[in-house]
Image 1 (spheres, rainbow, N blue to C red):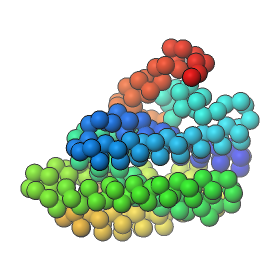
Image 2: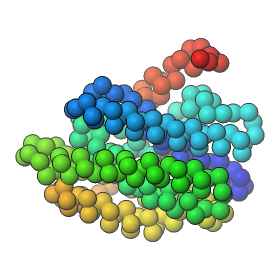
Image 3: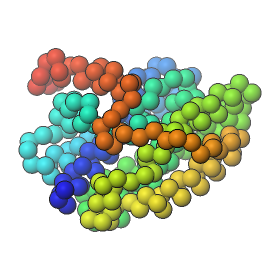
Image 4: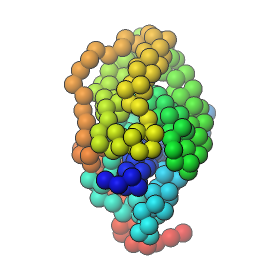
Length: 252
């Protein structure tokens, strides 16, 4: 893999994570527990979709084959997406959504901050803009996590179960493969060993505030970065891609 190919692959992964999580959040617009949360959820989804557009557009420019953001978002097969498994998990109840957001955004925020120091100026700029948005996401999700965890007996039980069930999908974020290693070597990308320690520290801190016990070590699911997804993913992208697949080349 050349240096340029490494950067393209990494950009597509970043775009895939943002696109898939943004799509998941659009599914629950008008399903929040209160009006303010409805507005917040819609804004979170728009942030992720906006980030995906930036990552995809830059990847297309580097690739030089005429593909743009719509091609990457809507015209790839399931195995071509390399998002983390955690972002494709179903929304479930409100606690499931909050737990997924916090566990992912805690890593994503650290990843973006590290990318602000990478040697590719364009990616560093995108990371800086996106990091500001994710800081808000974390404040929002973190407040809800504490509110649910330190709330009623029922809310505590359910959010604890959500965190513990989603924990198996966190290992994939923190373990590097050939693309991660090449990105670090060629572009001064994130050091995942350092990020793992920081992530665990931050997650442990917020779980303590929420009175949620830190999950025990367990088997970790992986495969998303290789295009191997859970059964939920195919249904999601089938709905997401319907218009483009049915009416190729359609535009507003």
